[in-house]
Amino acid sequence: MKNKKFIDVILCALTWCTAILTVGILTFLIGYILIRGIPHITPSLFSLTYTSDNVSVMPAIIATIVMTILSLIVTMPFGIFTAIYLVEYAKRGNKIVEIIRITAETLSGIPSIVYGLFGMLFFVTYLGLGFSIIAGSLTLSIMILPLIMRTTEEALKSVPDSYREGAFGLGAGRLRMVFRIALPVAIPGILSGIILAIGRIVGETAALIYTAGTVAQTPTNLLQSARTLSVHMYALSSEGFHTNEAYATAVILLVMVIGINGLASYTAKKLVRE
Image 1 (cartoon, rainbow, N blue to C red):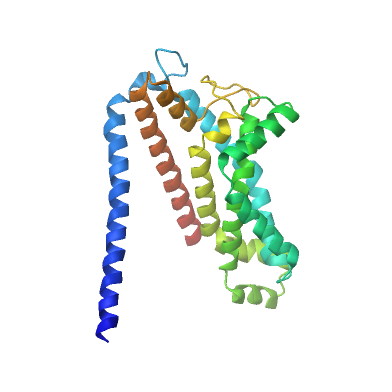
Image 2: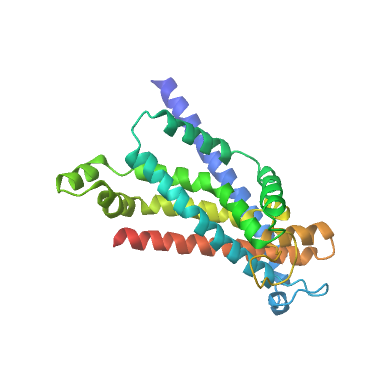
């Protein structure tokens, strides 16, 4: 009995130490970025025109938003409907379903540089799209597809079977049950996957250098090259001439991600209440 209590105390202490260490490291990183970046955020940093003297982040912000929207438009239908088929329509124990799941898990573990090389060979070279927003968005769509598919699948699995049985008992068809019962209940989990996907899109650098390019001008069409905030920050820090602006870009990127996550969380709570 004493040994069990001693082990419980040790495990509890380790858990608290790990939690404090994690929060401490996160706080240090955020604080360091804010302290180094906030003093260098100026109105000129948000100019629509990028020059060698004024390394504006506005073109990068516009490119980031456009690529995020395009990637989600392409990926969400495939990811969500694939998950619906795997959970609601495919028979349990189906070998094809297991192969699809294993393939999705394998794709989620591939380094982003490999996706970038694939995108450069297929979208940029073979399809002739060149270094463009559309090539970068399609590459990002392939990257986040397994993430959205798996999180949607787990969200649908968390819906109690009693909900489905009740819908069938009232005479609802499978399609009606999916869109009226299962999907509304699973929306918070689906949005969590979308939030994670957005975070990966916004923070991606390696894949976009090989597909979207690094042109620091405001894009006027989807076939133009552009750089996202993460690529912009990487370019500034690697050049070494605008390190302060790189920290300012990091602050803007951090605020942007927090804002997107907050908006998605608010939307999920509102949908659950309704």
